[in-house]
Amino acid sequence: MSLAANPYWQYKQNDVQGASPGYLTLMLYDGLVKFLKLALKSIEEKDIGGSHYSLIRAQAIIAHLNETLDHKYKISQNLAALYDFMIQRLLQANAKKDAQMIGEVLGLAEDLRDTWRQAVKLARETGL
Image (cartoon, rainbow, N blue to C red; front, side, top):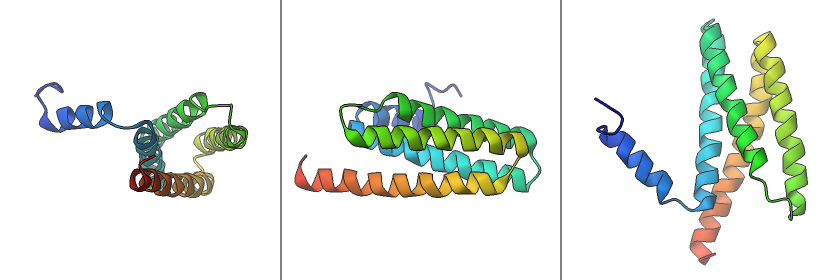
């Protein structure tokens, strides 16, 4: 079955295309957490290729989040520094296959995701 004929793929495409910018960011954080957990699982299972793939995907998500920051807000500078740290940590973790380093970034990613989830919920409830 091609991707175009796959009902799940069509649903996801519609979900992304109709999503608010805040919800899209939340989806990116969810993906980041997912790939970091997959990397940890791959390292645990001694799947070097799988861990590499998952870490590269996580780094790409962080890079995208960093590139799309709106620098007219002061918090963007702090987030840019945090994203840079996270990418550097994942580069080191990938080279060393270090689960502890990935765990550090996972904790940060989960905190960012949970905070963003609350912000999206608040924005929806208040009509912002």
